[in-house]
Figure (cartoon, rainbow, N blue to C red):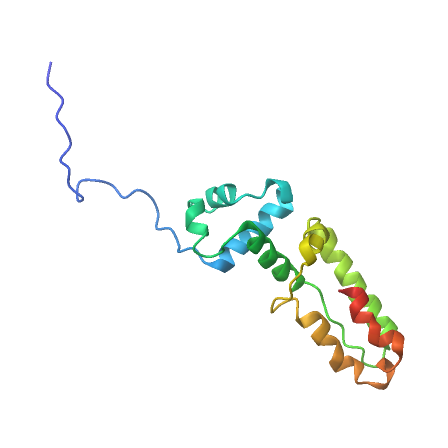
Length: 159
């Protein structure tokens, strides 16, 4: 019987370990975290599981987000970007407020974890995306239809 020979230990003799892995980014991590939160809920989210979904180690994720709480904060801010800020135009502030409320509700129904995470420890700590919600209203509230006290307090109720 022929003796087995060891393969030559050369980089040129070995096959590549797999397709090139795109570099991790904060945006890709947040997108995958949102997908995981949507599919499995907040209890299932862990850096280890998220790393596995991204074909990366949990330690690789920590180069982009410091903690799970920071990741959730980024996910909340990203999802707040889905909320439409209506323009009052000629329809009036009540119509615009109702549209904003419907948009917020639709977003919360798509991401059932959102209300629970938003309420955690005073979140959201307004990130760049979530800041546009209250900041989007002053442009509309400068119109005569938005000068009433009820109209000016609407953004606080919606956010």
